[in-house]
Amino acid sequence: MLQQFDSIDRILHALAEPTRRRMVERLSDGPVSVSALGEPFDMSLAAVLQHVQVLEAAGVVRTAKIGRVRTCQLDLSAMRATEQWMRDRRATLEQQFDRLGAFLDATHGPSSSDSELP
Amino acid sequence: MLQQFDSIDRILHALAEPTRRRMVERLSDGPVSVSALGEPFDMSLAAVLQHVQVLEAAGVVRTAKIGRVRTCQLDLSAMRATEQWMRDRRATLEQQFDRLGAFLDATHGPSSSDSELP
DNA sequence: TCAATACTTAAGCAACGACTTGACTTTATG
DNA sequence: CATAAAGTCAAGTCGTTGCTTAAGTATTGA
Image (cartoon, rainbow over all chains, first blue to last red; front, side, top):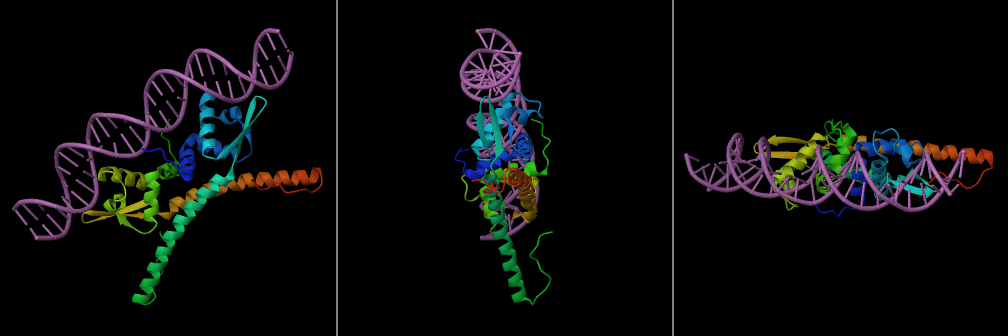
């Protein structure tokens, strides 16, 4: 597979990992250090750092080092962009349903709406 | 890594793959057959089918076979659930900002708001 | 200053995931 | 019926990823 990831690809890839997802959940309560972030997991600090680096490379978190501790913080704009991508797909498809509904209404008179999936 | 994926994990994993993301974009224009879905990609039909199976297992698409052709269709509820997860993380964190803002306002009088990231 | 703390880096390994090819199975269609 | 079309299944290849351990580097506190 070619590694020509665009921004959304990197964000989704970062969030697809269960451990990283739980880290993000933790970070939504506020900023924490790398070791504090990894504390719930049975995992070396090096592994925790690798997850943090993936999240940071994706733009999902920002980090800053003060003294010897690196503090991690969620960057919401990445998730906003991803939500937006999903909203766009939904909007496009929902438009299709609307057009189909209108077509059916025009062809055979108005009937029950088909514009929502079960 | 333990394979104890929950629903959102499977959805995000399915959408994290660039090829599958483009398939989803195609499907947001309406339902297509497996071979039509794979037509833009330089890839065997077997590979296309594997992607479809991942998307279906994640609940991102539903498929149905009529005669010899299997038609694929987006299921929006999966993406809605994922959007919701992201909205929840954002909401929690934004609440933190609000609390911090209120704290700062109470401690030193009102100043410029910190409730939004750059 | 010495030792503990908090990361960081690098190398290596095993599991996973995206592809492939090749052999079928099922529907159409001439 | 014979052949093509559309999809399915099963191995097997190979790069990526999540993790480990081991050996650093700064910082901090007694």
